[in-house]
View 1 (cartoon, rainbow, N blue to C red):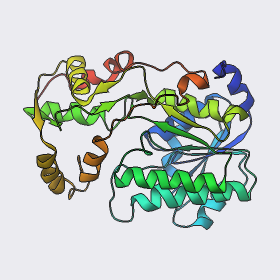
View 2 (tube, rainbow, N blue to C red):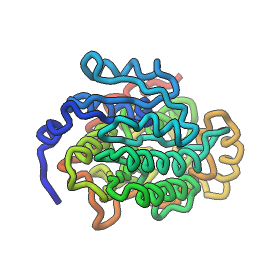
View 3 (cartoon, rainbow, N blue to C red):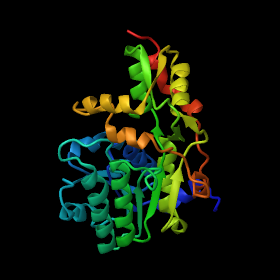
Length: 319
C-alpha cells in the first residue's frame, strides 16, 4: 500500500492532456470534473459534440474540448486517442439494445483503445471495468472480462478499476428503486434479496481515476472499488425506504419467477430488468480478500448514509 495526499497527486496532472472516452455518462462526467479540478486539459470523445457543453462549468475556458468520435471502428478510436498523454475509458452499458451490444462496447472498444494507446505512446491508461467480472457468469461480466484480457495483452501497463454498484445523485440503481417505490405497492426481492453488494460513491471512483493517473505505482494493477458497507439487496431496499421516508412492502420473488418477468421487461426500450442482470445478481458484488482497494489509492471510501439523504428526499411523497 502507498499512502498519498490526493491534492498533491493532482498537481502532477496540471496541464497534461487527458482523453476520456465515455466522458458524458454518469461516471465519466464526474471523472472529467475531477480531472479539470486537477488542472488537466481534458478531451472528451463523443458522438455529439454539444453533449460536452455542460462539462465546461467544471473548468476554465478552453480546458475541456469535444473530440468527434463515432465509436464504430478502430480508426475512429485512433483519431480520438492521437495526441493524448493519458487516456481513461469510462464506456459501459447495462443492457443490450440494437447495435449497442456487450461484445462491441465491453470488448471491442477497450481493445481498440488499448491498441491506440500503444500505437501513440500514451503514458497512462486507466480502464474502468466492474467488480466480480472474474466470477460472475452473465454475458455482461463475460464481455467485461474479455475486454480486460484484451487490454492487458495490448497495453500491459494499464490500470484497471473495478467498481461495485456505483451510487450518486444521478445513478440508475438507487434512483430506479426509489422511483419504483413511489408507484408500486411492493419491491421485488429477487432470490429473497440475499445477494451482497458493496456500493461505492461515484466521486470516490472519479478520485480513484485521478490517483491512478497521477502515479506510476498503479501501472499494471487492478483495484477493486467498494464502499465501507457490505449490504444485501434487501438491506439496500430498506436503506432507500428509510432514507426517503417511503413505505413499501418487500416481496420475495424466486429466481424462476423473476426470469419470466425479466423476459417481458427486457423487450422494453429501457428495460428495468433483464435476465442477464438477474444472472449478475446471483454473484455477490463485493471486494475480494487481498485485493487492492480505494485505500491503496489514498482514498477513504464514502458511506451511503452520508450521501443518500442529499438526493432521496425528492421521492418522499407518493402520488
